[in-house]
Length: 151
Length: 165
Figure (tube, each protein chain N blue to C red):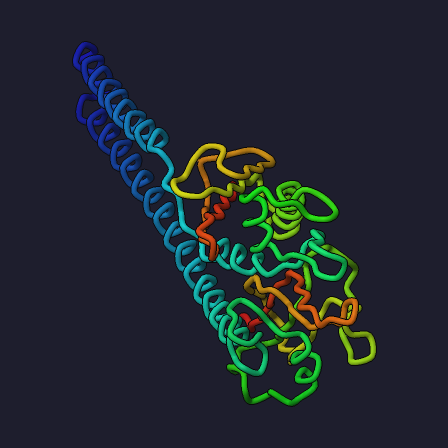
């Protein structure tokens, strides 16, 4: 009787261990699965709306460049009367993204052609995480603006 | 304890264990389902508000000529006092346009302080319990700089408040 009880307990423990191992394997697969990049309409809207923003870049005594023109100036290596277009873009986007998205981190890239690590401009802030949303637009001059928001 | 009693006790414990297990699984499922339902309801209201905000920024009464994602604030300041009560869906509680960059203290726009202000109250019907959603837009106006007419654009958000049912 005692021996039979012991055998039942061992069987029960074995089943629990087996179920636990299967659950752990399943969990590990789920966690290791690379996060899919979610396309975000909100980020897309943000980028499109930002193109018209008037920046601090003065091209002459009375007119200021907007973000879209400034991306072209930065790519072509032109200069504003009062500074470097790429630096003004860097500052403008950093502040704009900070006030618009209250998230863990973000990364902004500007490039022409294929997606590349550095491109024309790359700005990032905060921490990266697997929970990410992305938006990308192309300006009239064929410059890609890509923004990733990490939450 | 007799062998029969032991067997009955074992079965009772087993049944209790299985019942508890299924109750827990059921509870977990119910919580998951109700969360999904709430999320769906919220996202529906939100997407409806976003649709309204997109519609508003593309209507000729408010938008910049031939441009998307742009509201003409010169038009806005004139039209904001018009009665648009019947123009909006009934569950819309308020419509605001706020300049969000650079960040400043809220100053409500009137014809007297325009353009040195940052918030346009387009429509406001106090409907009690409400939440909001919106979309990013640029806020453009024409200014005279050095004798020339120059387009100046700020960055903002069109915020739609909707009633929570």
